[in-house]
Every structure is written in structure tokens, then in C-alpha cells.
Length: 405
Image (cartoon, rainbow, N blue to C red; front, side):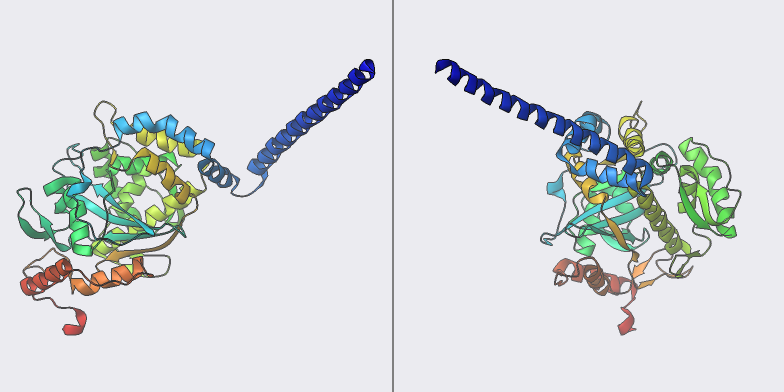
């Protein structure tokens, strides 16, 4: 009986062992099949690289790897710890949206954070649920309220807020005048933008003969400012390929009309900001179709090569953990709208008061329209501060909202 019991126990062990072996072989088979499918996907399916990037950035293992791989360099080279969010005035807009300021600076002497104006001011508006993104250019010459370096209140061009009080001053300018809640920003110079575009292999744009002429003109100065090199653009027409430096020079054009893909025409600085949004849209499309190696190249350029021997091209107060979280939104995002602010503006002619400024024709009305476009599900009533700023600008300039003229 004992031998029979042992024999039966042995048979049970053998059956269990066989099951484990079968399970192991099945697991190996599934793993091999998965790898094979992944390889076939990468080589045969359209947009396969983008699909792989989505899977990588959204899975916990991928996020953990990204956080580990770049955090130390990011915290050392890119992260701005000097900006105190407690010093930034914000309006409670509730949950549902993330708003980030994007500042572009135009340094002539190599300076990065001091003595510079933010000649590009954009608001990146993200719907956290739908991942729709809206991109707003705030015209740099807009007459708005800001705080001077000694704490006084002044009304000046929007691009001077950073010059006077750094990132905190620029964010306070946006929030106070537009009733927003922005506490995070990204600051980039010409060289930074050029490097980002180059890391993704350049972009293809529609280029008129007039724009081709001005790109080559701006390239002369942009080469000197950045220390980078790129040949003149030799062709115009549809899908002209531009390198990073060529695209950066294109973003600076404001002397010829820009026509967007919907047929709308923009001139002067309004055309310049429209070109910038056009380039960022092309850049986003390129990034969304990029593979892991290309995105790692961008990360290496902006994080590991940034601030080498004091050579800085980008700065932000957004933590690396949040950047990784935003990546999961970026791979799915849809740039649904791009536009300029203010909507209704008056630009005085030469010889008139406030020549060279962009004067909002009724700040209250413009801000109300902005909130309706950025936050369509929310009810907005202008704050007392926006009303006071609105009244001051009208009294100071004599420029009224369109309906009041």
C-alpha cells in the first residue's frame, strides 16, 4: 500500500511537472509571437513607430525607465528651482485643464535668463480629458499691466514683463491681465528651437518666394546669434524641407504676408506669430510620428547637452515627473486650434501716442472671448482686476471696444 501511495504521489508530481513545462513552453511561445508581431508591426504597418512610442510612454515600465534615465541631468541642467509659485497671482479656474506658458527669447549677446525680452509669448492650453491642445500667441507689443522690478505698477508691452521680473513677472502679467492660472513655463532661445527641430530631422513647410528671400536674409543674423550653420534655402513651393536653423529664421519673418492652410492672411507681427504657430504644429506632427530613437535624440539634445560649459538653450520649472506624465498626453494630443490674442486690436500709426503698441479694443471683451474659446464648458465673469485694467487702458488710450466706437 505504501508503494502504491508513493507511486500515486509520484504520478501527481509528474503531472504537475508536465503542466509547468507546458505552461513555460506556452509562455515562451506567446512571448516569441509577441516579439514577432512587434517586429512586423514596426516594419509593415503605417505609423508603427508612433504606436510603439505610445505603448512605451504609457506603460509603467516605460515611464519608470524615462524617469530614471534623465531625471538627474534634467534636474541639474534644465529645471529652474528659483521660481517661487507662491509669488505668482492665479485665478481659480477649477480642474479639467492644464495651462503652460511658452516663452521664446531673442538673445543677441549670448545671455539667457537676464536682460532679455520674451519676443514669443504663447499659452499652451490642454484639455486633460480629451487631450485637445489649443495654442495662443499673445502679441508681444500688447499694452498690458505689469509689475516693475521695484514693485510699482506700470503699463507696458507684454514682452517687457520677463525683462523686468523674470519668469514670475511674465507669468503674473499673463494671469493678471487674462484671468488665468499659469504657474509653469518653458523658456527657449533660438538655438534651442533649432536643435529641437534638427533632432527630429527638420520639417516640411509651404514657402512662398517672398518668404524664401526673407528666410535667407534672417539666416545671416541667426547664424551669428546661435553659432550654428545652415545653407541658404534654394527653393520655394510646397513641402520645402527646412533644417532647424532655417525654420528658426522662418519664424522671424514679419515683412511679408503669411497665408495659413485655411487661406487666412496675416501681416506684420501678426504674420510672424502665425508662422510660429504653423512651425510648432509641424513640429508636433513630426514628434507624434517619431520613433523612440528620435525622441531620445531630442531628450539628449535638450537635457544632457543643455548648459554644457554654461551654454544654456532651455529652462523650465516643470518637474521631470510631470514632464513624463505630459508625454502620455502629447502622444495622443490633437492641436485643435491656434490663434492670436487680443482678437480686436488697434495699432496706432507713426506719430501717434503708443505707436508700436498693440492696444486691445476692450480688454474685458477680449478676455471673455478667450475664456469661451479655451474653456467652453466653464462660465466666465471678468475679475475686478481685469475690469480695472480694461478701464485704465480705455481712459489712457481713448481706444474703445468695436461696439462702442
